[in-house]
Length: 113
Image (cartoon, rainbow, N blue to C red; front, side, top):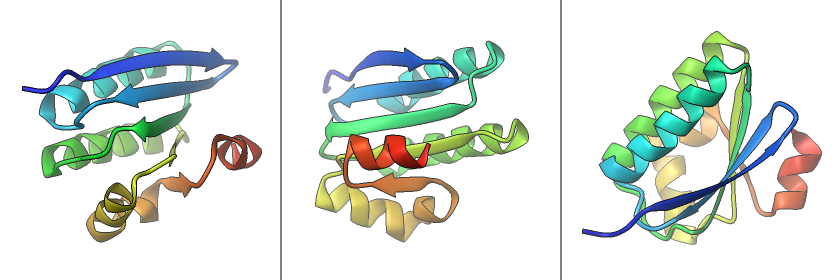
C-alpha cells in the first residue's frame, strides 16, 4: 500500500493541494475530505499540484468527479498542474479535462484562477 500525502497552501478563497503518491481511493478520500471541509468554510477554488503524483486510478478519478460536482453547486472551480503525461492522458480519456482545468505550470494556473 502506498502512502499518500497532501500539503495545503491557502490564499483567500483559493486552496492549493500539493499531492504526493498514488491517487487511488485512499488518496482520493484525503483530497475529498480537504475539499469538503474547505467548501463548507466558503472556499470555492482548488488547484492540485500533482508533480509528485505519477499514477491515478479510476477510483481516484471518480472521487475527483464527485468534487467537481460539489464545486458546480457553489460555482467553484477545480484545476490541476504539473501532471505526468500518463495522468494527463488519463484525465483526458476520463473526461475530467471537460469539467476542470489542466495547466502546465503553477504560474499558468494562478493566472487563470
